[in-house]
Image (cartoon, rainbow, N blue to C red; front, top):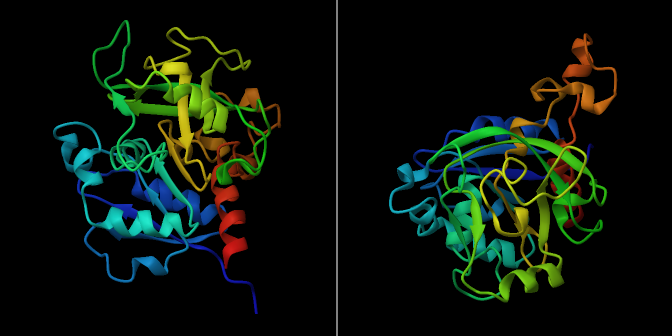
Length: 271
């Protein structure tokens, strides 16, 4: 009998629009999964992990992610995360994880914000391809088990409020010390440049993703689910793997798929 696959709930809120791409990446990584509506809370604790996808939950009224974060389903997800289950928030999902206090998760309250982008050319929503650089050793965060330190990964962004920021002057130093800052915006060569366009939204310390201190919860603003297959990338020549013109190779995994494969590996250990 084949081993059980981790079963992941992709939580859909009114206004999300990335649930199908996210589920596709989950299935392609070797996990099982299902799109679960926000009001289908009964029995959700049976899932082995959770992903909150991108979009505009509740039209991002008040500010991005805040209404989603107040939904009762997050109390269940918080409890399951405390029990060690993996939780990934992508874009709008990342905003919700910050708004409910799960990220950075050092205190039982909201410690950061994802503020409106600071961009010299565009006021508001901005979408483009960027690069993120892994800034931690293997093992710290459960989503980077297959990511090398200093590895550069291409991903797209698509948001109007993606700027990680905080009024707590000591918080960023704590996150650096705890190795909770997982990905930072960089050039495709891996150089960290604070200014635009390398840092596309003005995020403090070029932060693109933060994990919890325990490492099983991560909020990431770029979209790994939209860059998990070679065919999705804008410039496959960066990969130097001779995919051009090979249809089968174009369907193979791109570097961002490693986040979902890592989630699978971690969840398998808990089954």
